[in-house]
Image (cartoon, rainbow, N blue to C red; front, side, top):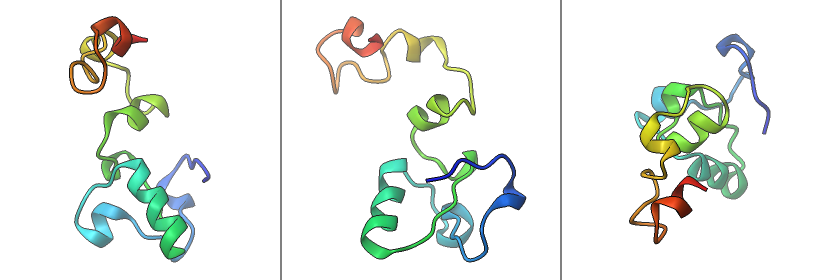
Amino acid sequence: MKLLEKGEDIPEGAKRPKKDFGVCLAQCQAFMFVERCGMSIAMLKEDLWCPEPVIGYGLEEPPKYFLEGRNRYPDDVETLEAGAN
């Protein structure tokens, strides 16, 4: 994986999920395509489906609900505190 600053830096032959497949992907899905299919995938903000990598990579500031843990509670964690952590 390599983080790129500009779309012009995308290697030739790399696939863009939204442009080439017509869908956004979760970061983990992109990793799976790379690992299992040997595909080269380049993702910009508009290609990402999940908010976690968008926020984690610094492409957007986290909204208040995210910092409060509401992005994971109640589906993935038992408490808001656990989600915020």
